Image (cartoon, rainbow, N blue to C red; front, side):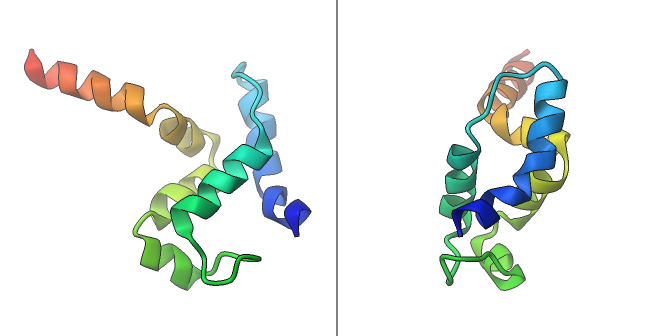
Length: 88
C-alpha cells in the first residue's frame, strides 16, 4: 500500500530535483496529500474524494506537474508576495 501511494509522485519528484530544488521526502508529501483529501478508503483516492475535499485541483496539479507542486510548496511565500503587491 505505501509503495502505491508514492508511485505517482516519482516523476514529479525527479523533475523537482532536476530543477535544482531541495530534496523532498516523498512520504511526507504523500501524507500531506492524504490529509488534504481525507479519502473515504485509506488505500486510494477517488474522483469523488477529490471533489468532496474542495482541493482536488490543487492535488491534481501537485501530482501531474512540477510547477503545480512548486506553487503548492511555495503557497505561503506567494501569498505574502501578493499581499505586499496589494499594499503598494
